[in-house]
Image (spheres, rainbow, N blue to C red):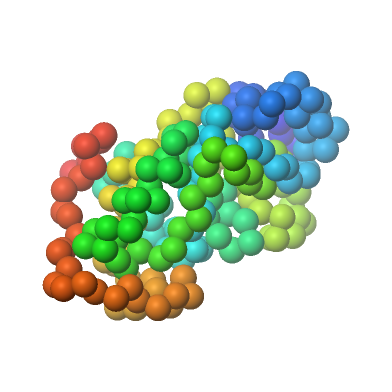
Length: 200
C-alpha cells in the first residue's frame, strides 16, 4: 500500500505475508485497509519468529549480515530496539546457542519471540509526521515469501557484532553485568554458519 504522503510502506505482497501470520488474515487486511497508519499486534511462530535486539547492537548485527553474510529479511525498529524477522523456530533454537559462554558471552541479552508470543509491528504506511515511538520499517516486507535468517546465521552475526564494540560496550548497552567466566573461555568461532557462504 502506498500514498503520496507515505515515506515508508509495505508492498501489497508484503502485506499479504504479514496478514498470513494472523489466524484471520482477511480480517487483518480489512483492518489495514481502513487503518493503514496503525501499529498491529501479530502472533509469532506460524510465519515468522522475531529476534529483539538493543538498538546499537542490532544495527551492528544488520551491518554484519549485509557486509559479510546473506543479508536479511524484514526488519523493524520499535521503542529504540531492532526487530529482526527470522525463520519460524529460530527463537527456540537461538536461546540455547546464546548460553554457550565461549561463543556468545559478550552478546547482550536478546528477546526471542517465538511460538505463543506476539509482537507489535509498525504500520503499513508511516506518515511524514509520525512519532518515532510508533515504530517504522527499516526493511519493509516486499514479497509473499521473504527470505528469513535462521538461528545459526543470527548467532554468527551476533558474535561478529559483539567483537566490533569496545570492551564492555555491548554489556553496558544491554544493562547487565558481564557473565562470569568458568575457566578460560574459548574464542568465538571464525567460521561462517553452515546455511550460507559469506561474500568475499
